[in-house]
Image (cartoon, rainbow, N blue to C red; front, side, top):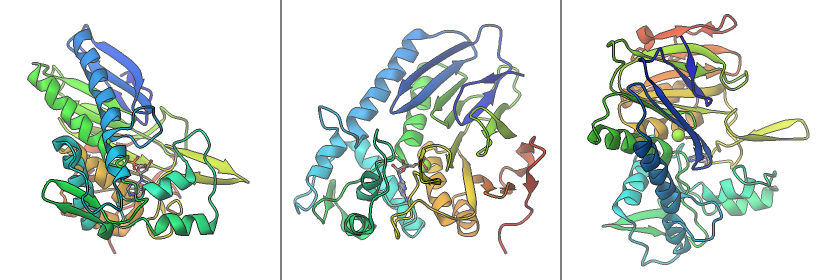
Length: 337
Ligand code: AMP
Ligand code: MG
């Protein structure tokens, strides 16, 4: 057994004779591709190109040429709105749908809050109350309208942020691309979003190590055995900064504007739809254990939830495929009172 990959989830692959492993950095995170059947440098190039396209389309972080999403955001407050490309529209629709289903726990209008904290920037900081209140005035799903193919942001200064959804959606897209290219099996890791294509050559399931949220990257607390699917984790450890002994992480409560503080340390979602898996990972994290479990159930998602006091709950969808390996975790039988 060998651990491949360096990010939040590790895929434990006992690969075929001539596996190829590519690694790089894109969309602000480390990425990798494992092709058990051998090298395909052209496909790795194509994937990197597609990730550059994703940045050109959906980032909100400073760059010389504004992304398409930044152009849309620049129209905030203008009732004429903006007509996004079909791809950008698809991701926005997905965000809005899971946003409503989660009663606003997932809120893609969170941009002003994310910017105020600067978590993904070089200079993260704790904003003062007044600044947060001003940011929150521009947050809320009711301030977005889809009018036919146009997106209207009703309030000036609104910022859509697709950081909670886009990577998973892209993972799905890349898997479909690889399939069209005739690839039978692959493991794609976009910064902890794992997309699995096909199955291992011997027909046995993939084994995905799930990152221990309390230990160094690359340390897993359990293993998921699975066929083709998407495995997406949201956790406090993914992006954070410390000020005065307090740790601030990157998933925000859209009501308070502060990093979510509940019983959860990480949420792993297993779903055949990569975009949905990503949207749900963030939504379940914000909702907390009990409401989050219900949301996952509604979408037929597999969930692996880790609490801050090292308890693990695994939903029925994946229970017989998950094996706890860390000795200091306790299994919770029931999160739904
Ligand atoms: P993920 O790692 O998929 O959970 O996504 C986290 C990213 O989504 C953050 O870095 C923010 O850009 C954005 N985000 C943070 N909080 C929320 C929220 N409540 N709803 C939607 N997006 C959020
Ligand atoms: Mg997510």
